[in-house]
Length: 220
Ligand code: PRP
Image (cartoon, rainbow, N blue to C red):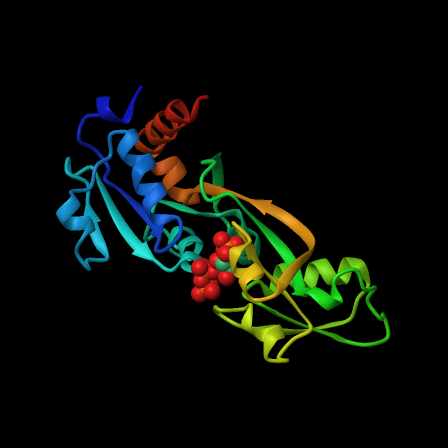
């Protein structure tokens, strides 16, 4: 069954990331017949309805998407695997949406690329991903001090705030234009559809139809 065949029932609330994933996610939902009026998208509203009224969208910071879904104020969300790994939220993750492809990488100034870590000295690492960073360096046996930032992480090595960074790399342009290079790729990331555990059961018809529709349009 397609979500377009469903009789009026449970409305689904979908949490979307503001920023880099937003346009691609909206385009993906539009291909699945879930349309938000252009006038709404051009507004500053943070809570929008699809034109057919079956879905509402909430626009939140990327790192907050798993929280909205885990607590059930949104039934469904779209967020990067990077954010999911960092949040460890208890949600279902039924679908890789294939958009927002990027890497989570360790990077540093060009002169430190290729240098071994001195295992007796603490390395300062600036990042928006303290959990991923801690786990990665722990596995390597490298002692680190995490400097938690919420953006413009590439500035940290330039200003001497950190020796390395762990950050998202998409085109590599931000690193390049700031004289930084990838030292190691920790993992790849794409956007995932996530679903609240209770909604997965209580709204299984609507959630199932949404997953089926998105799966269909993602077919090569
Ligand atoms: C992300 C990331 C890098 C940049 C990478 O930042 O943290 O800074 O994008 O993209 P690129 O490889 O295509 O240059 P974002 O734009 O989300 O802003 P932020 O620095 O405020 O986190």
